[in-house]
Image (cartoon, rainbow, N blue to C red; front, side, top):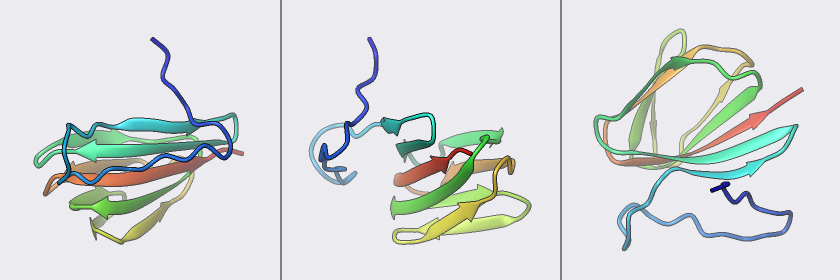
Length: 106
């Protein structure tokens, strides 16, 4: 089954991890120039070092995550981080967390 990506002007609500139901990672938008993903990580989850071919931003919506990218950066709710194109990085959740990842491609 193909994932549903949002259409222009299509609104969704990114639910809180504290609300009802099981919140999961969701691919929100994917085009040839832009990608947006709500990444949901539970305490202790880790994403090993990897790189993306575009410029990336990480906006922590809820919880606490650690980004390793030529140094360690801890993000809490409301924190925002920019990563240069192709920068290797890993992600680890210190708490149940939701982050909005955006990637811009050349």
